Length: 90
Image 1 (cartoon, rainbow, N blue to C red):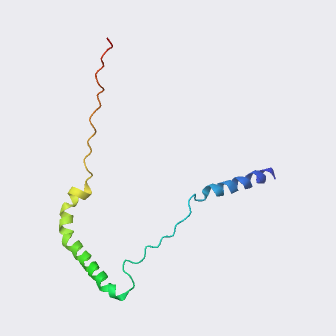
Image 2: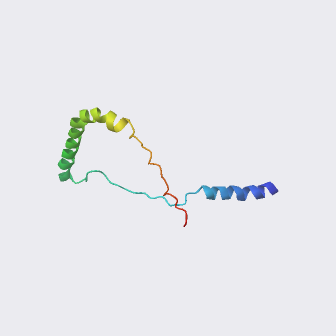
Image 3: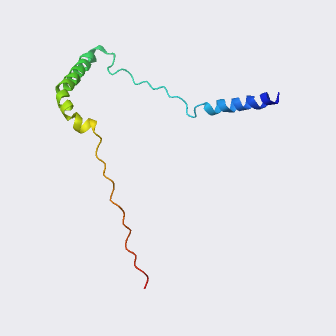
């Protein structure tokens, strides 16, 4: 009986500790194009231009891949710190 009196508050405290501290936020970003039919041609034109730009620039991105995307930038350690010279008091 004594174990259950200790275990129940411990389980309750563990459950409270597992709860998130911040409330959840449901954000609606909406569709990329409005449902108004007169804006659909503009949305389609943007998609066509974006796809064409990706296709045209693909060879250049593939050629630049080893230089910009694959190897990490070189890291040079900062120069060592040399304290100022010590001048004894006069």
